[in-house]
Picture 1 (cartoon, rainbow, N blue to C red):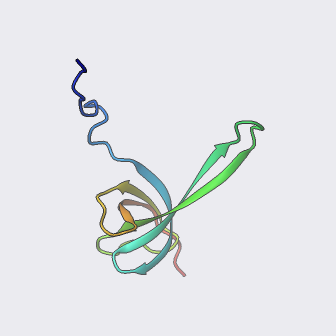
Picture 2: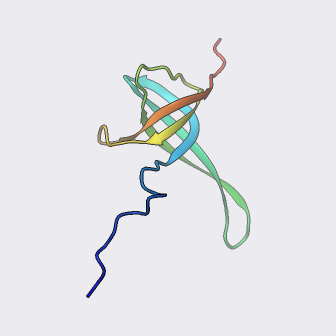
Amino acid sequence: MSEPQTAAPPSRRGQRQTLEGVVVSDKMTKTVTVLVERLVRDSRYGKITRRSARFMAHDEGSKCRMGDRVVIVEDRPRSAKKRWSVRTVVTKAERN
């Protein structure tokens, strides 16, 4: 007989992915767009290239502004595109 399938190991259960990026848009209500950049090494030539992705994140209280560096965390789906939420603001952008 086959073994019954078990859930994820306890060490992995409950952990949510976190990313750090820069707020590029704060024009929506309770939502910000965060640009996350990462460096990827080419497997054949070894050249390091920059890859970026944009994530819509929930910002309760609208405390983030454009240019702020924030940490976002995986969250339940809040809309069609929004599956992240802002955990903390790492650095505030300079305001003129």
